[in-house]
Length: 413
Image 1: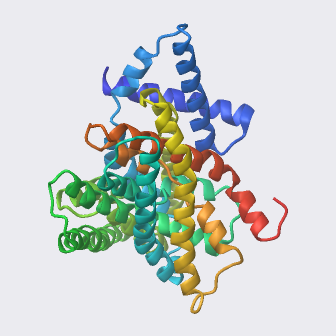
Image 2 (image 1 turned 45 degrees about the vertical axis):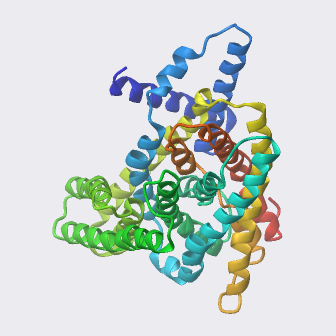
């Protein structure tokens, strides 16, 4: 099957499911598409079990899609740039200490809690899982997903300060988590040393280097945008920033996600204010909003149909049902401790910890990272656990975070 055929199938299904959702269901677009894709997949699996339909042909079609490569080296850069483009950098700067701590220490704290407890959960159901793989799982499931978070926060009424914290954290903590994932997986597979110095050096190179590269990329884009007034060329420049910048960052062994977020913030603030005419600003916003919507639709569709390729043993399902509340508890602790300690210098809205906890959604990045694990006996149970957490996060937390925000602020949902 050709690449064009795969893209045609994905876009056609995304359009059909988006129409069904908009016409008959009325959920947020991404969630509706994922839910329809999931229900379709479950129906096909059930028919296959009954012997009424063979799912091998459909599963074979989707097996041609490398989810990890598609998300991490394809969609992610566009979605991060589109999201960062509309984040107010002044509001972000006002919450910089909270965002920085949640995106770094918060991720590490959550990863440790999840890894330790999940090790015993897997043992409880006789699933052999070395602790180092539990740590890999903790790292990949702990970051909030900027794609899921930003797509859903647009639709709910969380306090603005909380929305900025969750959005800012999600934009940066995926880059931090990817660096940690690379480091821990390298130790797991024996490709790197298990030392604090080597992991610290990798983090410094990837994360800090990514910020520096992102600033340079953002300034280069700003200079080019300011020197002309032609919206077609200016849109093309931003596309080149995203694709060329992300690819170059990867080749330089810098964090592509962090670099693109920084460049997107600079373009969306300094660039929009000082380097664009009203016409360019309007056309650029419309273009990246459309890119964001289309890629989100395809990504949520992929999450929904991925169940056709996952093998769920009963023990995997039982362990996943316990890991779901574990991940939420770890999020509560990793958010609650920093916010409580920072209250002496920062002001937080009422019930900030509850909203930050419930609004910390997991999504496609966690699925992409777990699918990048090497084939072996530990991969399948981790895929099942990750998929269960992501489904719960998007379908349950994503659909109720607005209600939680309203109740926490004493309003009728």
